Length: 349
Image (cartoon, rainbow, N blue to C red; front, side):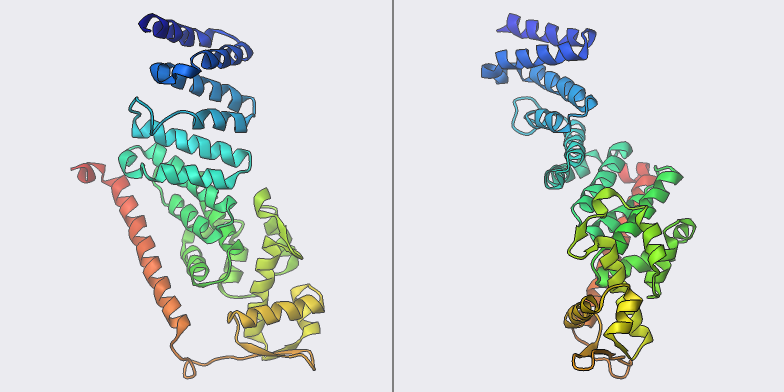
């Protein structure tokens, strides 16, 4: 057994001298030979799998590369693997999963990497890789508000280049715009708008209009859409994610301007047809996002403008309180990360 293990070790060591196509054949043949006694050859098999994964990834075969890496027994094997190696491998699989458009699998492996976060907190490169990939996975999973928060946290990471921080901020704005309306989205809009770094970004115009609840023109939507990634441009029902987000925003903006408006006028302002305008108005009012009533006989939407004296504490007040608590927790996490990055000696002590 000792001789054969050494023989396998020697073969693995010589693979770098061979052509990639030949390495694949030799590695796969060797894996088949030792398949029945993997425990005895775990170290050599692990090396083979990493080498094979490199080759498949270089050839653009993300699925095969991921499958090979998943077969490495990082948690159940006889060998002990370092937290850094395990986390890098999990993040690599997650990245490969995004490449072959399996965001569910990507999220699963990012979550595994999350369990190792405290064990690798001193490795800035690995932490930045984790934060970046986690944000992208949430983005691909259409969990836009969570992705926006992750991108924004990433933009505060000291070890990033200025251009990388700007891209993270841009991604945060895009995800916030696409996110479903609610208190978390409102808070994220406020956070981004008040961040002076955003004022120099191309997406600032849309951010500003959403923050102040102003009407967004169709040409602005088309220009903003060019900056979106392919997975963010999908269409659901009559509109793309961006179109729906802007149409719903514009409906809210209209409710701030008008006391009442006909479906025909509303449709023109929203750049949709009358049937869509009526359906949208009914849905948003029913959801409680805008206060108002619909007169179907005359085809008019009546908006209710509640004054401070009329306001009654209830679900909205509780939601706002929850928002403040969530925001405070987010701010504490951000400050903690900044302290760790700036005062490593003190933290280690």
